[in-house]
Length: 440
Length: 106
Image (cartoon, rainbow over all chains, first blue to last red; front, side):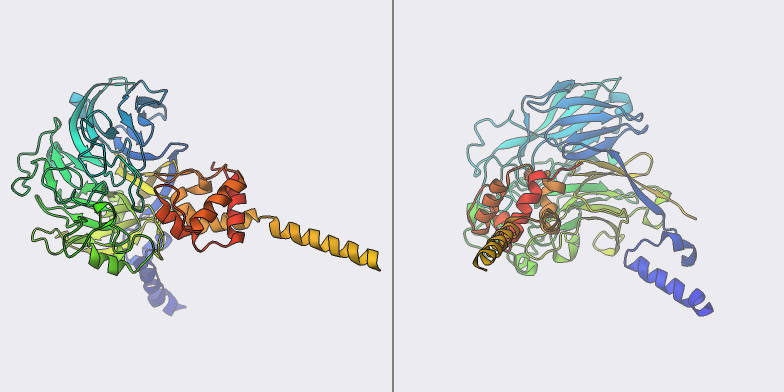
């Protein structure tokens, strides 16, 4: 028995922890390792594709529903519907130009750093307002995504002063011959306020081959702008690029957050049946996605988009796909190498948030990342939230632990609350509060 | 002898026919949770860009799945659905269609 107690049990617990199993009740056997008790509780249910959340210091939570609009949940649990999309009802106001289709709709939301003074809020949505002469085919410019700035009323019952601070993020208007080929594909959409109070906007390639490497189109880019939509003065994209661009060469970024220890930006994005990626961003860097046809040794591709080649109809070894159209193409001298690539799989990375607060114990400062689960061609669906320990240089990982919340859903939106809990929106219609408490 | 045998044969045929035609909702639900749920969400409610597929008649769902299985394009996500439907047996389609007819999410 003594042998079990002194040697076997710590070894067993260590092994379980390495495997990512919850060992909270054995924390004492770690000789002080601070593994928290993690618990998920449904905060809201019955929502329509909740997509993103943003918080005020008192716990007030703004949230978006992809095809409905912007609402706010007050700390007492009551909800005010603030700004709806076309043909919605029950909202204090609405935008007749706002619409949803496929992956597009009302997506990211972020609170201004100086909200207490200016009451400003930012929202990403699809809009018909700036289509202009474009949008007649999938092979031309279609400015169908915008970033709006609102002023939130003192009573939190309405918003006003809508100003469209970004009007020219491209949108896919028509179905194409691709998997996930409907309108609105690869629409990006996450908003976060980063160091210095600047707004970061993530984009997708909208199934257009030239987007990610094009110097002027905003599809497949990450933007860093101020509250009026102007470029950060220190943005450093290559010569000839739109100055709002912080990084380019992205496929479909729905996750961005900033490491608490140094403010460094990290994104996560979906892979094309191979290599979901986390990337440490470098000012002006290239994430290395280039699905254009007739380039990099490729010939013509369906609808001029090589993103699912060489075989978009059936499952095949992800490594073969990765060699044909890499997520991080090493032919680019300014490539930002991936921090993590999901073991070569694509399972759909939805959102990510660095865990803040010492209540998270050993997980404090690690990146929580939601995997929505797309199980095609032999890839396991893998719906989960991973906790990723990233190396100080941002170029690799130390380890990954699966967050022990006890269920699997399509984890779309992750955001830290002011109470140091992680809030998680799932496509199924719920928003969960995931708490971590020390058990010492 | 003849009458008894005929009656037994008729009963057997009818019973066999009913068994072969009746769908197994539980098996349909189990099959749904193997793969369909990853995109269409619990109980076929529809999530993200994937449509709601519950609440349709058995005939409708069966027709759709059989068409996908045959490689027939039906909408923008056909490539995915054809791939997912290819391995389905007649029995699995029958069970899935029956389950999805009445499936409801909380």
